[in-house]
Image 1 (cartoon, chains in turn yellow, brown):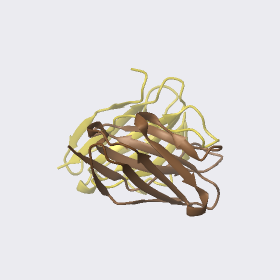
Image 2 (cartoon, rainbow over the protein chains, first blue to last red):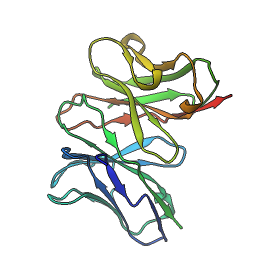
Image 3 (spheres, rainbow over the protein chains, first blue to last red):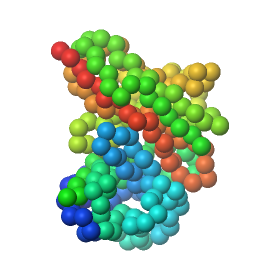
Image 4 (cartoon, helix red, strand yellow):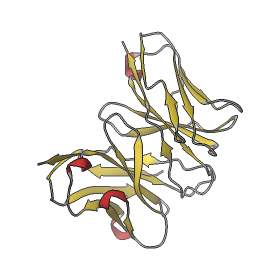
Length: 116
Length: 115
């Protein structure tokens, strides 16, 4: 499968635990975006990364959330000390280009986080 | 900053009837516009996009959309609904920027198709 791969697809955590969500972009893509979809809402931008760089994190909550895209391996979205309000679907998307804004994003199937 | 408004969070259509999903955007510069579809428990799939050129854009599964600058709209239509069109549809906008293809999404419209 050459698409955007996210894992785990489903994750259950208790309040106060940590959640780590992983995303491998499509082959040849070096730009990764994370979006959050709360129940009955649209997708909200969180962060845009290139390899080893955070380009735009204007949608990231100030606390407990972090993201990285190392030189080797998948992009990681990390949520520390989860709360019930973090329950959502987290989508990763990738693109081959950065700079023109004309291309679409290619989305993974999402990671659904449930906080008990 | 740009924004997207989708009128109607839920739309119900009969099989064979016209599907019309409304999208209006706000942008200080000409935007690039997209429609995505999301089937239950899946990711988003691109239906169509407008960047430049012809304002009537045709996409997959028989959908099309027309960019109307004067109305700041990008409504999605399909002449005849099929049961398989039941899904959630998202309109999105991006701008020419130095950094990436960041999309701003509307709140989505869930389509129910009645037999």
